[in-house]
Image (cartoon, rainbow, N blue to C red):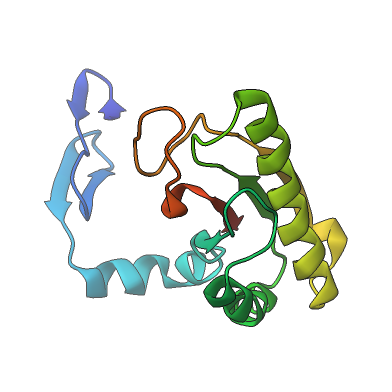
Length: 160
């Protein structure tokens, strides 16, 4: 919302623009991407890259990566290394097989394993700002209790 005296204009669409003129009037318009780049290009180029998410999977009831995810770790490490000052958080998850208490421990072990592997591949440990286990509380694929679901046995790595 842009206000000038008693006047106001709601700027609520992409590329919407409003300017307060010398007499206090408000002039509104819609810019195109070329005009936005010309006006704000320097500021836009200074923005950090958008957060990147990676998902890696585990062998049932273990903190061992699946073959596919183990092979993907080098790719994940290379992508993280491209960030100028990465902040990485790692969250481990399980399926519903086993007790909730066991799954809490296992999900944290998975997150810690992912951290260990990233550091081993050259990612500075101080860039990893969070490691957590969520157990079976945030299922990717909803299931009943005691159902082994491979897509729920994962870590999510968020890089910003």
